[in-house]
Every structure is written in C-alpha cells, then in structure tokens.
Image 1 (cartoon, rainbow, N blue to C red):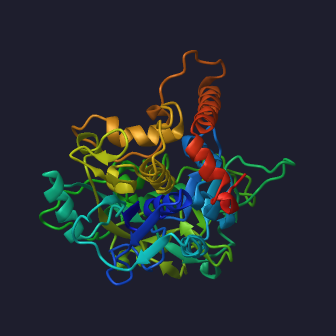
Image 2: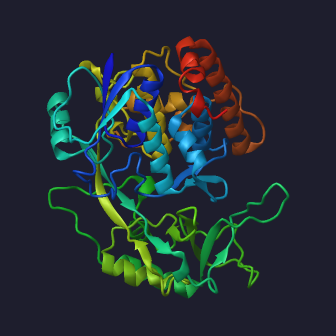
Length: 450
C-alpha cells in the first residue's frame, strides 16, 4: 500500500512518519518553498509560525497530558520537540529552527518516505491524508470544496512580534516566572517581564485601541479564534481586559521595588541562543509602522529592535462533524482522510496529535483511543461535535467525559484524577493493540522517548 500525505506541517510530518514506521510507503507533498503561504518563511517541514511554545508540559493541564500521551505512543515530533526545548518554566517551548531541522532529518532518514516539493491542486488518487494546514492553497481549497459540496469555514490567526535581546533595557525589565521554583525551592527565571505603572498601562491601552490596523478584505468577515485574539482586539473589549489577560501581573514581584506592578508584558526565549525573545500573548494585526511605535511604549522596549513583527492571516478549516467519520475519513470517500488544523483542532500539539491519529488509523490500528484520553478527545472533537456553528478548539478538559466520582480538593484534584484516568486508559489501549505495539518496538525504536 502507498499513501499520499498532502502537507509537511506538524500533522502531515507526524502522519508520514507513523505510516513509514508501520512499513507503508509514503509520498509526502509540500508546496513550500516554491509556493509560500502568508505566514511561513521557510520551506522546512513542521515550521512553527505563531509562537515557539507548545504550551504547558504539566499533566494536570490538558496540553501537558496530551504531550505525555504522545510520548508514550512514540510520537516522532514530540521526540523532536523534547530535543530542541528552550527554558519556558512549566511550558514546552522549542528553538524553532532546530525543531524543523530535526523533523526534516527524521523524514530524510525514513527510506519509505519520498518528499515531493510540489503544490497539490487536485485531490490525489488512492489513499490520501490531507494535512494541508489552515493555510491550504486556494487551488486545493477549491478542490476540497468541490469534493465536499460545501464552502470552507474560516477564522483569523495572529502572530506575535519577536525582539532582539540586546535591544531590551534590562534596567527596566526583570527576569521571573509566575509562582514557579525549581526542585530545590529556588526561584527560576525563564521569562523577562516589562512592568507597567497604572498611568503607563492606560496610555498603552489607549494607543493600542487607536492604532492603525491592517484592513480586512471586503468579502471576508473577521472572526478571531479565542486563543489567538490580537492584543488590540482584547483591548477593544475593555480597558482592563489586558490587565486580567496576557498582561496580568499576578505571581510577579519586581525584585527592585518589592511590589507587584499594575500590569506586565512577558517575553519568552525564542531560540536556544537566547538572542531573540517573543512577546507572550501579543499577536497583532497592527500595521508594521504602528507596531514599531506602540510596542516601544512597553517599559524596557523603548529601543527595541524587532527580529519579526506581528502579522495576521486567514485560516481555513472544514466542518469536521458534518464531513468526517469516527476515523477522520471523509464520509463520502473513505479513502480520503483529513488531519491537523484543517479539521478544526487548534494548536501545535493538537496538530501533532491529529497527525499521529491519522497515521496510525490509516495504517489499520483499531480500535480508536478511548474517549477519556487526550488523544480520544482530539479524535472526537472534529468528528462528534455539533456541526452548527462549529469552531476550532484547543485540547481542554471540557472535551473529556466527566469523572464518575469527583475527588476532594477542588479543580486541581479533578484535573489530576482525569489525567491519571487518561494515562491508565491509554496504557490499556496500547497493550491491547498488537500492531501498534509492534510499531513502537520495531522500526520506530530509535525514536522511542521512553
């Protein structure tokens, strides 16, 4: 059997590697660098465009649980991410370039994978996984719409700016994490914090609200995914919305004053060298000139040199619940499977998980992961949600079935109990799927995380 995978992003790369690990020949198509998207800058596989963070690595948080499940399932991209991580407190952040290069090396080492740098404009024949991402070309999008008989849904995604570290005024900014300490109880300082006084904050918010923004095209209705709201759109919702959102000062005390600032902007390391730092939660659609002006109002960034300015792009996705069956296959054409953000799952780790699922399901793994696992939740969201007003979603514990008995101890205890249940169910599933066990202990052994 041969499978065509369209797109070498997070989902497509993981799917291709899982298929090859199962002994299946793969043609992996990628239109970049010949045809670029509005957001990508390279032709490398698995390029991270919005941020370098894969979010929390703590299993009482749903993203952290999903990462742990993927590690136990021998996810290739999780192995790459773990090998390229940079300091980010309780989160998993990576050096973007090293991560993409690690994935590229994995693809090259698999003799059963042939990478073809060609744009796919029609649905390929035979078995196919469409993992073209949220930035599928207009030709492929038209082909999908023709096949499904429906138009694409869409939302807008925004990218945060990145600053040269040497241009940051560390006499104003200070290093500190929220609440966190290492195993010895000593403070850790993976984040750089720019503190605002009350006056500085409100002046900044006013400029954000008044700043010139990139215009939306006339024929497009502007819909923002909640997890990637532009910072100026958050400011529009109320003057204090940023202070209770990405600029909240909770858990941070300026060591020079001993007091908590009115608000802060946090920066996170973008690469292992520490030469570039991104503004956490500061996705934006301000014009470049306004970004240069307004973001230099942030204390400590008065003379900031921007390695990359923020931008915004349209993301497309299909109505998964209406079109896909329980194994991510098109209901009307079972040979065609969809994976990644084009299905309506949102986020880096969710895309990797969706690609993993597409790969092992196409390879014949059965049954599907249990509903009470994070992988089960990622599989069921785009296939079993209500089709009306379907919108993208990150992994969250709201997608899991409730516990039969709620433990004492509040929300944290409930999340820990859900994570414990999920990992037990995952272990039972792995033990019961002999073909998946063979792939974990066979040709994929060199990448096994455990």
